[in-house]
Amino acid sequence: MLDAVAEALRDPSLIRPATLSLEIAAATLVLHAILGTMLGWALAKPNWPGRTLLDAVVTIPLVFPPIALGFFLLLLLGRRSPVGHWFDASLGLSFVFSVEGVLLASVIAGLPLVVKPIEAAIASVSRSLGEASRTLGRGELDTLVFVILPNIRGALVAGLVLGTARSLGEVGITLMLGGNIVGKTNTISLEVYNAVFNGEYARAAVLSGLLGLVSIAVFAVLRKASSPLRL
Image 1 (tube, rainbow, N blue to C red):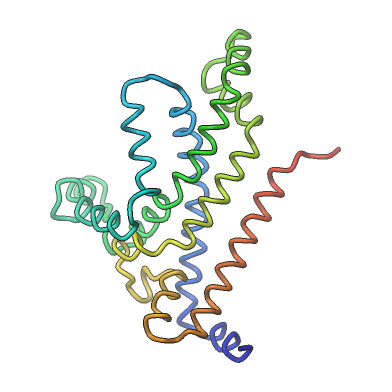
Image 2: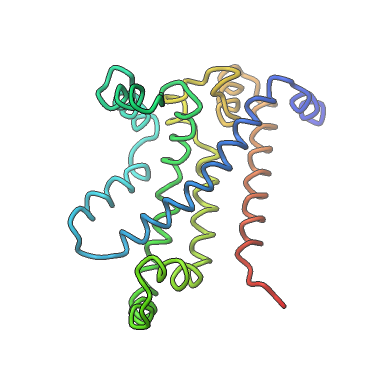
């Protein structure tokens, strides 16, 4: 087993998947923090037009098979579709068989696990604290940033840990959008898939262990960041 670990770690073909996975994880964490907070804040407000639709869109990755969701995103964002053509022509973005597609898959896969804890936490504290903040003259954005978020830090960290862990292990949506192109869009998770598909179980076990270690490291860093400062 140790020989398999050493062989896997020395494999130069893992450099690109490992680098890509770390880059995608870092970008996903930032986007999850921004989008998760804003969506959770919006969904915590009851009875506004479009809330039910937004909630359904956010929740879909939790209840829809990833490979099927990836297929529909492939159809939606392909260059032959109106949406995909607009992104390509107007913004120069192509989400199919590209690093951008891998990032999109990562963000979509973990976003519900970030949004839902934040939504529940904001809903539980926003009534009393929000009303008090507005009474003192603070606007909605100030209330969110300086009053509500510091009081839901635990839920925010929990959501980011869950979302990042889910994104690191994403295969189905990434396989469809990214295409599993060796040296370009293959992440460590897809390398695990490739190893199992090729019958290289020792390699798959080593790579799975590496993913687990990265997930634990992310959890430790976020947990440390959420701890109150001690003077």
